Image (cartoon, rainbow over all chains, first blue to last red; front, top):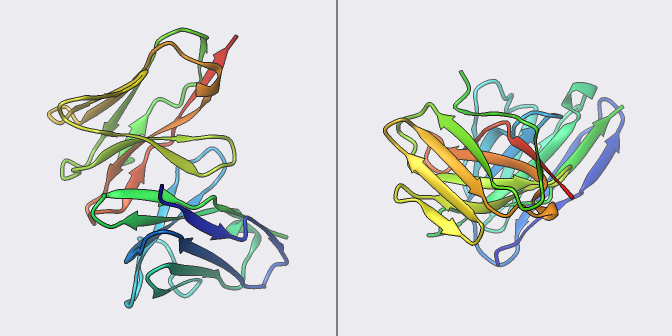
Length: 115
Length: 110
């Protein structure tokens, strides 16, 4: 079946540093990928839609200059959390849309802890 | 108001029991509906899509009522391994992006 790889799975960093998270579709090409965030005991919240070859579409309340998204190829989208602060600590999950299947496959998630 | 609402539970049931989860969605333009399963500290995994005609996959049955904007999931003959959080999901206005409910927690006990 379709597989989405997300890396790293766990990051601990100091406040003020930037963290890059990669999301790869391994056996299909994904023109659209999504980035979600999940705080403890909360639902997944869509942060942005990543479109290959064009700018990402951000949800209301998500700062595009803080959460930089690059979808440079049909199999890779990256999310960079710039100048991370403790309130950015969360579980970040990407998903990729399999073409013609209308099904999203999720990466294993990245647990970010900012000290 | 959240776009997808579901009872958070927890539902504690014995092995072999039948359990039903309900969910409502507020966006009448939503066209695609799913149930996902999420284990603790893991990513969501697709359990099944939900169709207007209702659909069944083994012990799992999903129903959709568009008129009342209501989705359900029925699990028969519960197994210990069914213990997880079940997420009700509807697509958003922007098409493929998904709106997730907060999840319903199920614990199946011996």
